[in-house]
Length: 367
Image 1 (cartoon, one colour):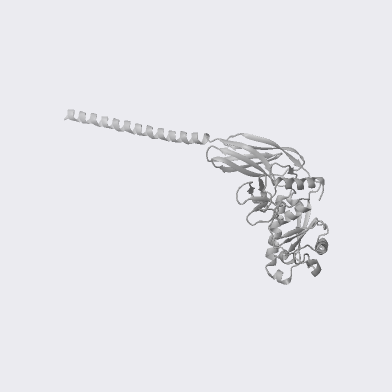
Image 2 (cartoon, rainbow, N blue to C red):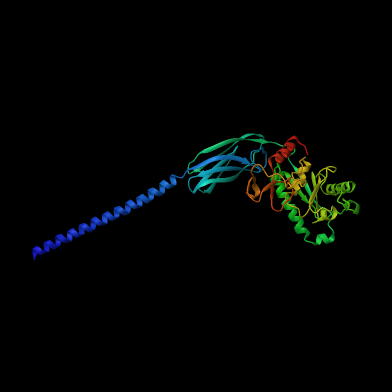
């Protein structure tokens, strides 16, 4: 019996040793698998390549001088080898801002708002990848000051009959004022805070002679339209004596009725300076278009050719800061300069030539 007990004891010890060995082996395998998992994840995170490929300071459009005091963003172009989280730091002069972003694999475009430049100078704009650690890129940009750096604009309802006013006048008029003002502030090279907007709720009525601006064939009656604009100027400056621009806001289809031309939605008259008119149902870029004429710009459209020319497509990318809206030179619908004709299938911003012409006029203190 004792011999048999020793054999059983030896078998039991062998089995216990085998089980322990297997447990140790299993734990080693699990540990190795965990270590491999951790190593692979860490390697993947560290292996993501994030690179700044371009940096620009933008207020309205790219590759033009900045205006002192106008809201500004830094555009950063970044490429990555994989989707990742990152922190991007940008500088414009003394202003430093950082932003956490999610980057997709390939090309990324990020806009980060910075403090506007305060003085005319050549300043540095930079962008760098803070996390994960990446490169930095820097460029120089010119900041200019304006001799004329403010505008006062008055919106004035013109020739609204009681019947016209009963057809949702407050909603139509207030919407037109807001949309036109927002677009003007965004697209003109002036600090938004320096553009003062006033909007009268009272109507300036025209006389029958002032309303007779065209004959049955659509020919202009120049004395009548000159008298019309002079009366709008007088009425507007009674309300805002120091107004730089008075905008006469006409009821819907006013030009179709009085000019016999349903295509017209706004007019500027060289004979009476700083007065423009627009139908209330015109697009938000109409004010900028008519004001552009005051700054010496010509119409971009031409309907005397076949096919008709709607206008000039914008030739450099832009950015609408207040709406965080990137404006590209391609795509559909197309973006045209606001000196083009109004077209429901298109959108509007400003091209480089028009922007620079207005900017240079403001720098010299003109109009």
